[in-house]
Structures are given as C-alpha cells and as structure tokens.
Length: 166
Ligand code: OFO
Image 1 (cartoon, rainbow, N blue to C red):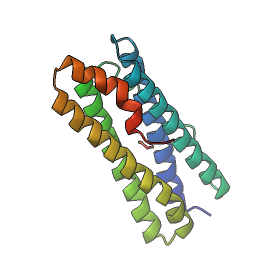
Image 2: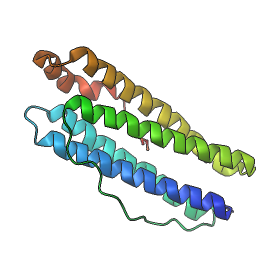
Image 3: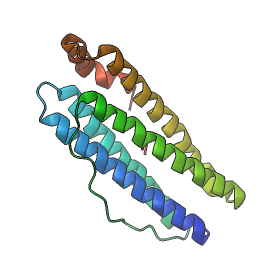
C-alpha cells in the first residue's frame, strides 16, 4: 500500500511524464514544418509516444498499489524553437529535470522503506540514464555540426540510429 506522500509524489511524476510527452509532441510538430527535418520529426514523435508509455506504467502501478492515479491537467509546452540546437538543448534540459525528479522519489522510497516502489523505480532510473546520454550525444553532435548544411542533412538522416533498438 502506498503512503499518502508516496502517492502524491508518483502522481506528480505522472504529470511530468505527460508533460514530457506534450513537450516532445510540440518539438515534433515544430520540426515537421521545417524544411527537410523528417528524421528529427520522426524522432520526437517517437519520444513523445514513449513518454506516454512511461506515464501509463506509473498510472497502473499507483492503482495496483492501492492508490488512485490522477490524470493531470497539462501546461502548454514550448511551441517554437530558434534552431535545431535550441530544440535539442531544451530536450536535454527537460530530461535532466525528469531525472532529478525520479531521483527524489527513489530517495523518498528508501526513506519510507517502500521497497516495492523503490524496485519499480529502478526501470525509470535506467531509462533516464539512457535518455540523458542520448540527449547529450545529440547536443554534442549538433555543436560539432554548427551551421554546416551537409552535417545537418546527415544528422537528420541518421538520428533514429542513435536511439538504439526500441
Ligand atoms: Fe520519461 O523518460 Fe524521458 O523524460
């Protein structure tokens, strides 16, 4: 059975995952109307779908553990970006925020001796490590590329390959 504070923390995380999904959906939509960014567009649509899955996993866990998962209201995400670099730096910033939040809940689970939740959260810990690494790699590549058009072409062509399987 979840404590009240743990239930609140997990519901806050539900909201964060839903907002991640919205944020990446907005990035996908922005990329979609830029010329030649089909790869980046597909990448962000996929990221958005994955964040929804992260949200659903939390919802089912909360309910299974005797809590009540709250479907949250959502803030409108950032809709437009100055550049591809700007969009990807927002992506990294967002992932770091999510990782911090997951770490806080892991800490709370340990201090409450809620080992079931602690165990459940390990999947998110691993996921965040991967997502942050991916976001950093993509930011580094964009920094190397700068304004070079052929570099950007290759970045867009190859972006799905960086994600790894899944
Ligand atoms: Fe939910 O993994 Fe990214 O934020």
